[in-house]
Length: 182
Image (tube, rainbow, N blue to C red; front, side):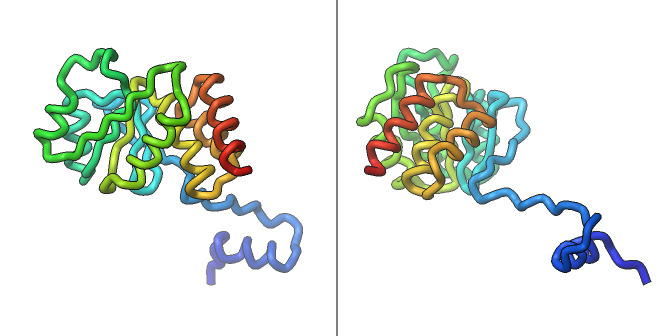
């Protein structure tokens, strides 16, 4: 009779036996999973029913529709070039389009409140995107901390692994959450 390691190892570990291999903890429900697509910026991740990304191409939005997305939350400001009319395209695919313009380096409390309200009100599954995904992950870290109870340092660590690059946005997110938790 063959005893499989995934049965034996936990039993030995429970008994305090040395030499039992370490069992990796399962990822939390907040851990992002990479999504592969040639039609979306390299920072494309899934967390539950939310897809967080850099700028998709026109075909990227078609892929989103095929995956069952119902809503697109666009964090790019009006002056940021996309090469096509995103609102028109998204709506032509039968998806809800929500724009919460976040100018790089100019995030404020009102913008965060608008984002959190849009996230709560939007049909899921949904896609949230900006140009590179940095703004997406900065706002997502705030959502994790305030709405999901994830400690802000843990939320920021997840965000940094997945696309948050702006030190200003990291500092803003931490300060915003600390103000709200008081």
